[in-house]
Length: 284
Image 1 (tube, one colour):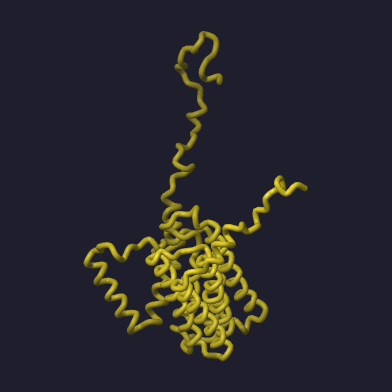
Image 2 (cartoon, rainbow, N blue to C red):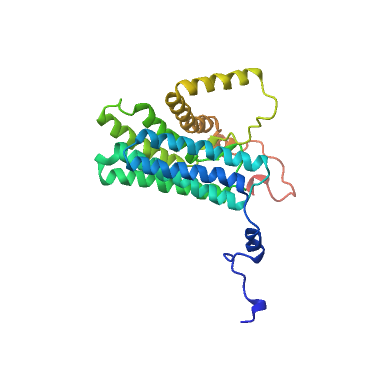
């Protein structure tokens, strides 16, 4: 076949794209992404050594690194497609594999196959959530997330372990974590809308009460970090389904179209005269 008329392969990387990658990558935001990946890997190692508290705090460190790399990239105008893909891979390790293994070791081992199956379901739903987000990133509205973000799901898991480690009854712990893992996994791949805070401009003027609220929240998190993280993540996880339920109940029947009644099919006792003398409008 003549090379000139050979059909183009959509999966083939163009020479222009290869040259762009050869020019290098932005170091600063990818350093934060690498730090988050390192913390996630350390969480896995700590879980294997039975240090569940250290493993949970390592995921929290990954959470801060994940928020910092995006902020730094936008502030320094160093966003790139490479950074987006690298960030997703790091998130899958730090917020997918690490929390799932931590939950399995901490509470799901007694369930055997059901235990590791639940942990795997959490990982695969997190991977699907990240893949769907990358595909829809240019087509979805920026004020909401389509499905529960995987960093929030990971925060819910690790904050539960930080708050209730050594305090819950064993039977209650096993059942509660199993149910929580299933719920978080399903919410990540659902179409439930969750509010996004990415568009929050901290450099713009805000009400004075908002500033005071941030200070009070920071003081509370410093003194009671486990309770604060658990409360914030639980509120965020619950607000999505509650918000969707409220909007669904407010939605008019039939997308706002008036409902048809029996009167609509009754013959008009006073029909209009025919338009052309031969056809009645009601006969169309």
